[in-house]
Image 1 (tube, rainbow, N blue to C red):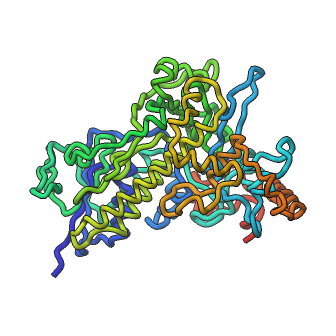
Image 2 (image 1 turned 90 degrees about the vertical axis):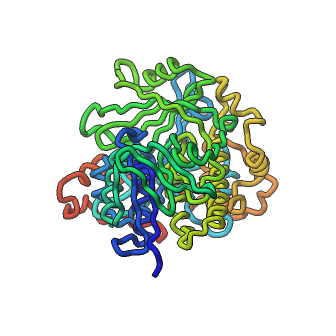
Image 3 (image 1 turned 45 degrees about the horizontal axis):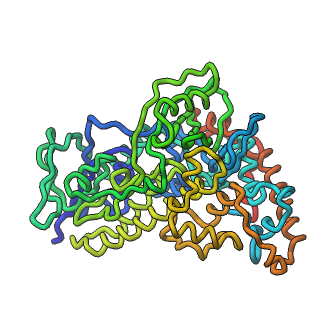
Amino acid sequence: MTCKRTILILGGGTAGWLAAAYLAKYLGVSKDGPIGITLLESPDIGIIGVGEGTFPTIRTTLKFLGLNEAEFMRETAATFKQGIRFTDWVTGATADGGHDSFFHPFEAPFPAEGTGLVPYWLLQDKDRRLPFAQAMTFQQQVADALRAPKRGHEGDFEAPLNYAYHFDAAKGARVLARRAVELGVRHLSGTVMGVALAEDGAIAQVTTREQGALAADFYVDCSGFRAELIGRALGVPQKSVRPILFADRALTCKMPYDAPDAPLESCTVATAHAGGWTWDIGLTSARGVGCVYSSDHISDAQAEETVRAYLGPGVEPPALRKIAFDSGYRETPWVKNCVAIGLAGGFLEPLESTSVVLIEVAVGMLAELFPHDGRWDAPAARFNELMTRRFENIVNFLKLHYCLSRREEPFWRDNRTPESIPAPLRDLLEQWRVRPPSRFDFALDLEAFAFFNYQYILYGMGFDTDLSAARGAYPHGDTARKMFARIQSYGDHATRDLPAHRALIRQINKPGVADAPPLGAPPLDKVGA
């Protein structure tokens, strides 16, 4: 008879409860099953975050867990996210109050036969062509018009446009906790007093003040920046990427809306400032605002003034919460019978909202690689390799946003110095001067971002790819122009047909929303489907 294998997850929050629910569902946890999962949560440690941004992958994860989309959104104050609007990242505000802006949508560029539309956009007159994201997909038109990516009667996690969510992190953890317990996870509350190691260096048991000694076959460290198991007990160091990504502080707050029916963005707004950038995330009843900055370039007091300037004259922010962090990751997040997930495994500044997707990736890999036979060396080596490569590639992608800026403050000038740009990114930038980013530049299983994500950032920030020498290889200019016009037409139709984002959120939050009638016209079909 096979002995029951046990997993102890240390820490709650998004990482701990997502790991618990996912592993319970994937591994088939049950009272008499082969796997038992216990989550130990400290009663004294809160959850970091005033608004969590996610990737579209979160929809697949929530669906796998068996959650209802409307219920999840109601209980977490969630709204839809269609991408990120970047303001003042290229040159900054002008003397006359002008601002540069570009959009990073979740939709891939509109599909076209052969070489696609990107080369034809690059060969257009730079002074007359549409901004890249607007030319390639109609999602920017929809987001700019404050429309939602779907209609009220469309199915759970389904829509004509790709989307993710903004949600309240603390409320999200509670929803995941309830689902994990439903799936058979045992929940304990307790404070860790010590960790004992076995002779081979593996974790033998965790001692708590309230629960005494807790032993398991396998441990998942979701204890956040404390890294109670992977860092304090096992001594695994974190590799800092501060020489590449300079930001190490954030000031955060929640701002109520001026009115209950205030317009509601369906994207993250990221606004650059002299020493970093400010996020603005719209939840159901409040905005999550955070100023990310480098303490080497501006002081805490200057950062606070930056928040006040962003909110506007006469607006007094609530108490600002300061979060200090060091962007980096553990190159060996899985050591013997312990794996670190979430902040314990690594954290990169919140630009592009990579925290939750890294949790999703780590949990998914752990589920598939889980050592049922107790032999962890091979799966640990594979996990460590894949997570390290993914972190490295995300660092490159985040750096791309900074090193392309033409702003002249010291923070931005320092971001353009060659020594602060990783060699693989420098090499790609040199190649992209004569060709656009391609799917052959990236290995899909090692990436959080596809080649077209790089295109949106590159060309949104005015990067110059010179295709003039290859102009003869692209003879279908007339067909491409018709396709560009068709995309704009689809956008006009979508902005008329899709509901206002605020209106859809209001409908979702009504009691009995599952039985609510459709909003207006028939559903907008997926273009090209």
